[in-house]
Amino acid sequence: MDMLHENVQDSILGATMDLEVFQKCVQSNIVLLTQVVCKKFVIPDFEQFTLHINRLYENAHAIKEGEVANYIPQLAKVSPDKWGVSLCTVDGQRYSVGDTNIPLCLQSCVKPLKYAIAVNDLGTNYIHQHVDKEPSGHRFNKLSLNQQGKPHNPMVNAGAIVVSSLIKQGANKAEKFDYVMQFLKRMSGNEYIGFNNSTFQSEKETGDRNYAIGYYLKEKKCFPSSADMGVALDLYFQLCSIEVTCDSGSVIAATLANGGICPITGERVLSAEAVRNTLSLMHSCGMYDLSGQFAFHVGLPAKSGVSGAILLVVPNIMGVFCWSPPLDKIGNSVRGIHFCQELVSVFNFHNYDNLRHCARKLDPRKERSEVQHKTVVNLLFAAYSGDVSAMRRFALSAMDMEQKDYDSRTALHVAAAEGHLEVVKFLIKGCRVNPFMEDRWGNTALQDAIRFEQHDVANLLMEYQESYASSLKSTESERRQMSLENLESMV
Ligand code: GLU
Image (cartoon, rainbow, N blue to C red; front, side, top):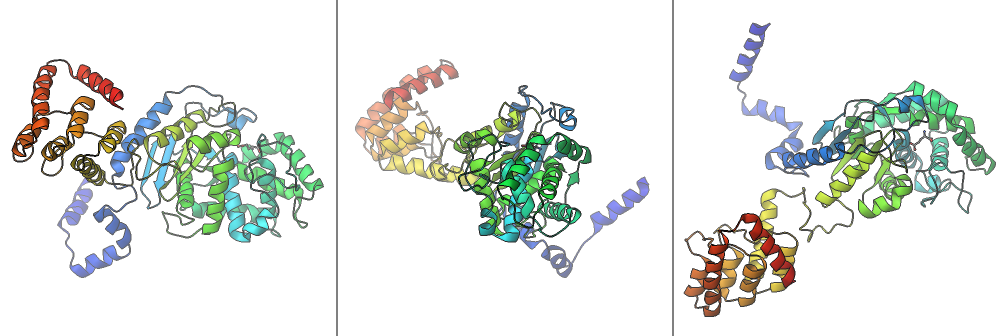
């Protein structure tokens, strides 16, 4: 066996190919390979990005609060320690950490997916003749309709039961179920999609509230005339019991992030219209009674389910699927919510984060070198033009005020050479930058000031060099503290 292995290895190592064979090998994957070679992925420094994800995962791991849903035994018996996060970018880069390979039920996470299928097949107008688009302001399983006698939205049970009645009308129960399963399979790039029959049976047995909603919807004529309430409810319970893993769930989320095209297979699974509607409703109604807060703080479309799953979409970037069974009082996964909040506090993914002036957050869409070039140019330009208020803004947004350009010149060099006394004062008193930094010709800022006959600046820098040299004897942390206090007093 070992010899066979060695032989195969030898033949692979010794293999050569001519240009024609090489072209044949690469042509079917040319887009992906070009992206790899040119580092043109939506998240170019993916490895660095995943290090942050690991940290956020670990932070949430430490949280032990919340209760596992216990209204059916199939959910109650799941370990509260399970915790997984998978992500898939719109160009197919994948990352998983924790329990990402274990089947779990979608529960309410299926609601946006079946709504997307319904809109894809029947169009927005038809679907919204039967279900509205407003947050309900009530619990997800409340027996209530809006003033026009429609369910408030497809993310609450009443709306989702009506949507179940709209899918594949005229087909029998088995065909309807197969149809949705096939759709989800395509959204997941043919990864794991299962069905948990005991969850389905338990949901039916304990689903009195959903039956009550069903009868109420029937009484108020919310179903299309040809639909049968019992069939719609049955499909509703079945769809809650469909299983995914975090891995397959993240591809589904990525298909939504990618406008309906699965990033793994390249297949268009959903229309752009269906995806846009779905994301809008996830954004306003996806997180039970936390939806408004979530839209405010996280600013991303998401849907959670009682199994502890959260399907999170970062439009045009990636899909994320988190799973941790312990829920808060509202019904959202405690670790999942924490992870989502931290994700947008580190990265500028919130819908209303400013992508041009958000120096406090990281932008993983950019390469590290690209970010660095941009900030150093901005900083040196502000120093060159004597713009103290821009310098103050940069300092307050945690920019490194000592950073150097390709000639190793710093803001202090530039401001000193130009004779901008106020900028120099700000850099030394507010930011306590190092005055001994040398550019590529070995010059300090003081030498620049002398050379360009900026006498006031030169005097100031001379004094500062002395005080800085003696402060070097104090500890680094004292120096930082001093500089923070100085900065605060100057703004
Ligand atoms: N099977 C649950 C119900 O219909 C779904 C709960 C959920 O995940 O929100 O009540």
